[in-house]
Image (cartoon, rainbow, N blue to C red):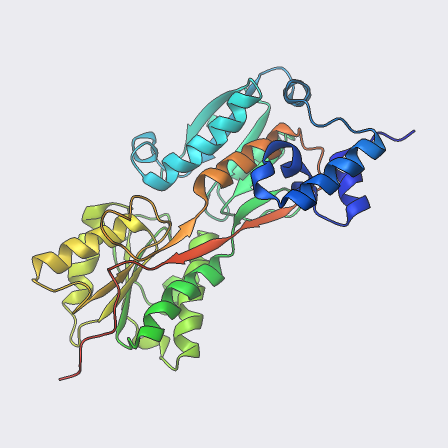
Length: 351
């Protein structure tokens, strides 16, 4: 008799494997009716449910997950989005009784020996740029791998959001308010330390896939609204810091005509843009609207932003790794949500 797995149940019900997994590990994510049906079929097929200890044993001897991300440790433990993600993956590891080995690769660090020498049973790769040698080293290890945010690697589970749709939602919000003079401040396009104006060629050749696609969302919404994307001032920064956002804000707000709305791809940059507006005595949202991204510590500042399920994404990545690579590769896209707060409003009257 063939072994009954989560995929067996998923095939019987015509749902995804992740949906079946949630019935056992995260019942709050499903309707009561769907969860009951999954459990009924599992019982009918003789499947008792995943065993955390068994899952960890399938990983191998090290008893640890490797977490690779393209930032410094100091940044990771200060950035609200990264903290939420870490909490999620740490929860999954702790529940299974395994450790978490953090392997930072700051921007510009092209080493791969860190990966080669890591004593781990699986890797979670978070936001590496296209062509990074560490990714090739990860894949060469032939261990279970889950990719978060970028880059998408066919044949391996991917966890993230629909970046173009999320970017378009942020841009569409200010466009629907009536803004036509829009500026953009972004981090995470390239890995070369550049800060300054980014032309269309530099935007389109971005090494970080997720940010490239998020920018495409901004552009698509603007073009649909009749704007010429070539007329949209675009300022790129090398680091995701409040001070970098402030610098970008001053650059954008120093233009003539001045933008009435600025889109940023992180909340940290958006807070810096708000600082620049305050420096210049501009009223937000009366004279300037600002939109962030990720809903990380944004509520206190009244920042309109795109909310991501950062902790849930981290936990899901961890649980996929703890399955030992037994599942068929999946592309799991979590929902995003536009959160409208007091940093956006219609543009000031022309005059």
